[in-house]
Image 1 (tube, one colour):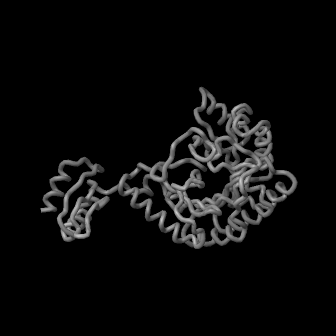
Image 2 (image 1 turned 180 degrees about the vertical axis):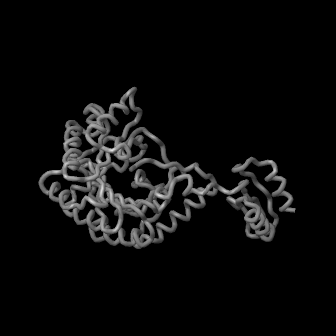
Image 3 (image 1 turned 30 degrees about the vertical axis):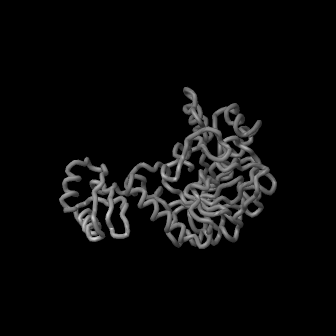
Amino acid sequence: MVILDLMRLMGTLADGATGEVSVRSAAERELAEKWCARSGNTVLDADTDASGAGTLTVRRGRPPDPAAVLGPDRMPGARLWMYTNFHCNLACDYCCVASSPQAPRRELGADRIARLAREAADWGVREIYLTGGEPFLLPDIGTIVRGCAALLRTTVLTNAMVFRGRGLQELESIPRDNVALQISLDSATPQLHDAHRGQGSWAKAVNGIRLALDRGFRVRVAATVAAPGPGELGSFHRFLDDLGIAPDDQIVRPIAHEGLATEGVVITRASLVPEITVTADGVYWHPVAATDEQALVTHQVEPLTPALDEISRAFAEQWARAATAAQLFPCA
């Protein structure tokens, strides 16, 4: 009977649509699951009691291959984010993790980062992102980056304002191969950038970009903007072109309603393709939500493999239920 019910249901559903079918026992549930597997359909969820009786939610057809939709470099586990620290020389009013000079440091530490990078490489991670806070406030950031870059492609996110004294020495100690610097700059002129990040920060960031380029680093520039005005993005990209930033290294991302931000894109775990993120407090679903308890996967940072496995598994289930509902948030 359940097979006939499934066949009738599938005849009413468009490809990708979902519906419900009743089962009266564990045997019927098993039969329904086998039929869906053989016929190219998907059981998404089962609301059944101890006897197996209840309701199955089924999808007509298979969900598309997420790697084909997202690209292999954006699949869960391809990128690993590590918050090296949370204290920062700036207090940007939309910082998604509420970093500032007063924020607790909450450092991962060079030794732990080295262990995590090795475990991530062994698991299959392709690229490491080191963020904060401001990573170049750490006296051993050069050691941290060198260790990560020896294993995997590594990007360091920075506001480029502390490339002097010890910060400059650490910068110059970093290899140019396998490393990129992602520098925050929000606009082609100081007004918008300084309004969010502090007076004079635009000029210092631009000087930092030029310094990094002069020293042979690959530089990406990432802007965080709410609603750019007419022509604003065009002016911004022309400004970056003139600085020598490659078009593919010019990133514009929205403000996320997280941390200090009082407005912006509202995000949830279900709405984000995960980019596995480690902080001193635990492992999170995504770097933009790295202080959001709803995005916390586990407080256990080491070993990292169980969290990598769990997030990959959870995303596969989420994708099967609502393929393409989760979106890429362009942190980098």
